[in-house]
Length: 416
Ligand code: UD1
Image (cartoon, rainbow, N blue to C red):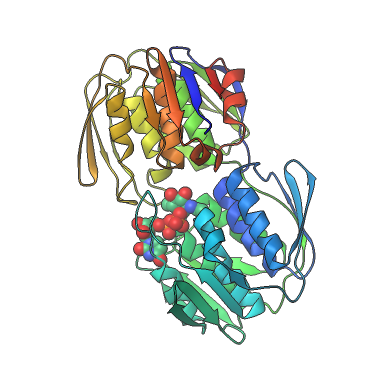
């Protein structure tokens, strides 16, 4: 089993370039199956989640060809397999994003129910409700979501919660439905806007992505094209927090600063010096970091995907910080690993109360999910002595070349 070893205590200094956004790439690759002509996607991150999804769509019958490390061409014939088995979905929950595209273009889909995962129960009721409103017949049989339809028809759908995945699945399905779909109370994450822009570049008619209401005029087919995925705001955020926590000075390049506003605001509140450029942010950590309170919320609220990394930083900020996790119920688990490193954290239900200590101590810890893994790296970077992280496969799901990038800005980190 691979492990990551970190010798803490080095401030991060220099420039780091951010890769394409995992969550946008996964949604866009799934939606690429709608296209009747080849699609070329640029700025695709080289991470495990993307490789698994490309493997799944290949098994279904799409042709996938890498043109270079970050550019992929996908061609999907008119007839493909529409059954995504449990073995595949188990490896990648986001393969549930294939439901909307398979139903819309091929009128059938069988996707294994993903079940629970480390960060929470993650149901799919909102995805199903929306697709049913568009006319799909959906049943749960033997652990599978089985959907069939004739051509989907536009409808009005109100989401009880602005779920990212449900918004994506329903928007993708509605792109090929007959007539108009109005989606209300939708997710507004930048990845939703990127997906809508991608679909529109292939001929879809989608307006309002990024606001609470998305209107879609269905078209009968989508062409191909070339599209570049947005930079990963969570990878950028992870490096920003690592710079602040190590009291470093990092230029984080190839980002869209407006996508990281909620994090920038919180870092400034914690007395971190953040300056924004056109497509970069510079983060300078100070010795007088201040404790802060954070509540995770759907965008433009503070992202749940940055919560664990912020907790890592706050473990050694003098005073009391409070984090409330409103999106995924199990995401405060990482606190137990920080406690092994000497952190003082009390978790009650969805709230973590963090009493900053002088210094964390290196320890053996394990990642329980992707962002917890990133947070443990940050904790290792600020700890005294060596930290050993196991379950590194979680980290590789969403961070491209993380050790190389960290080493290039002064971290002492290696994998063995
Ligand atoms: C996506 C992101 C993930 C991020 C999350 C929230 C991808 C591949 N993953 O996950 O990184 O942390 O958004 O920003 O893009 N819910 C329901 N019923 C549903 C769907 C969701 O109750 O049908 C609940 C979930 O249990 C959770 C909340 O809604 O409590 C948010 O989930 P959602 O926005 O759907 O997250 P994902 O799309 O799974």
